[in-house]
Image (cartoon, rainbow, N blue to C red):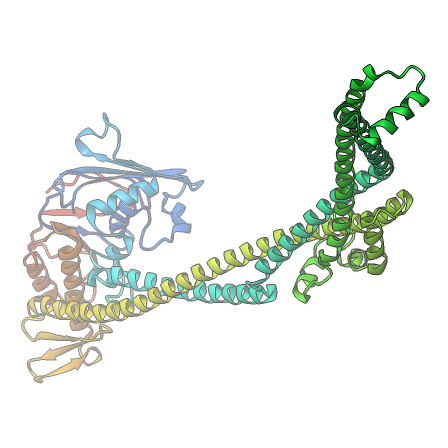
Length: 636
């Protein structure tokens, strides 16, 4: 970055500061007595670039405004490594209002700025010049202070060494590892809680099949009971309706049998008489029969013999009619007997219907936990249905009734009462089964919900185990990454110190007139100089203060060159505020001679001193006056 113009209004000492057409290369001298405003020029450059100064904290920034004024402004035109010329403007008032604007210098007044606002300008400026305030004050800007060894753990030195990114990565890795460890512990606690919850549920995988089997049995029992109730009802009605009808049919059947026999006898008598009279008239029986007929029937004549044949035929017809009538009545009686057998069979079948009072311990526990629709717990009312299902049965009475029904000796009242008792018992069993079905249905639903919940919890367990495994693998990766980063940090630090020693070895002989050629720089940036006279390395406290400052200046310039190579990658300015304050004239002259030749990138070097020898020549010389707070355009 090369500065072309510096202008300011009411900044620090100056009501007006205007430096224009600043040379891109060479030495720029700033001289003047104490409190003449030499350092204010450097502070103004620092304020324009970063919105702060070396001597003032951010909270004290309004002190940068000239005493008695309410606001100040600074403007800087510069060219960074991309070759474009930019204008940076900054404004500040005594209320703390701070604004900034960055634009291309050629179009600053006509086009939209590249960035507006303090933070936006800071971000864009970093993209252009490659460093921030901390690196600037540790390298390119030497404020009026004692030149000391840079702190090895400062942000600026780490940035120059290329360690900041590694440290960010290492910090992120450590933070990630710590967060992952906490997550793993939290997941393990969740896993333990889930395990306890699943154990407390006491899931029995076979219970659902037992409950469903029990439900099927109860449903089948209830269906059979309903069928028996219907069968009993139908058979009882048939028996009660058939009992008087059967008796009537039996009586009618007896009468039809009698008349059938009578018709047979009459047909035989009529037919036999006709045969004797018509076919065997000479037979003694025929003669005797004819006399009897003549005596008994006054109008009997021989011509009436054929009527005997007709009478025999009529009696045969009656015989057939009564035969069919008796057979029909016989079939009716058999049909009524079938209804009696049906009722008796149904009564006998009652003995084959199993009871359903046997509930296992698991089912009982499960069912009792299900509330009934009518309120209360099922377990609290389970005794009555069980008692109904298992109430005592008088099997002997049932068998007697069945036997009496079979031989039609049971009266209608007996059948009605006996069947009613059996139906009542079956209906109570059906009601018990219905309640049991409701309980079992709820128990099955509840058990399915429990199984589903347990399955969900187990799925969550599996997911947690997978996440824990992933997090543990992540922690292992972080541990490996941390080791790699630490190794890379050591290697980069070692390379940085070696490069720093190489850069210092080029500048130190020039500053010390070849009396000190090599430096030993440890990882903590402790500096020792190699004396060619003593042929050994010497601590800084063994060297004169002037030589110490020359060595420290060489180290500072080496840091600047390293930052240029790493971040700037282009021409760069240096601002050295009284670097030769404790140098004698000979050291000052030699240093001023050496500075322009140190680096091809450090082209524009600003040097502040109280005065310079008259024979020294500079590319620009700015003279400050203690009594004047305005600097016009300087003359080269």
